[in-house]
Length: 141
Image (cartoon, rainbow, N blue to C red; front, side):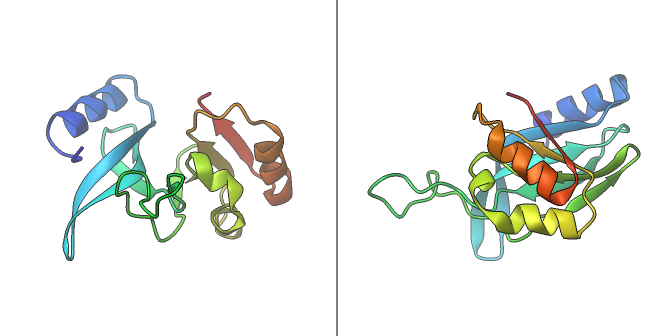
């Protein structure tokens, strides 16, 4: 889904209306240097309804018996930390929990809170990540 038009307008309006940050997980369609790409992403909207940043999942899942990542999803390249008025926010998505690199990068780059959109009911591993890096991990599950 492209981040323009109805999606951006609707979520931006909600962020403005409720004067809230909104983290929107979605499969994001973008134009890359060699054509269209898709990312499993989380888009952060600020209180004014503007896009404050985008995290693209570092570790998409390969389906069993296949080299294809989540139906053609392109992996992200880095784990940004977004400066918000409530603190420094990082993001990891679902299967990223299994890999140290993104979580470590967020700790090194000053994340105070890490949002973890996932369908996983896991609690021990996110708690271990939080304790190791001295940040809070929040999830929508």
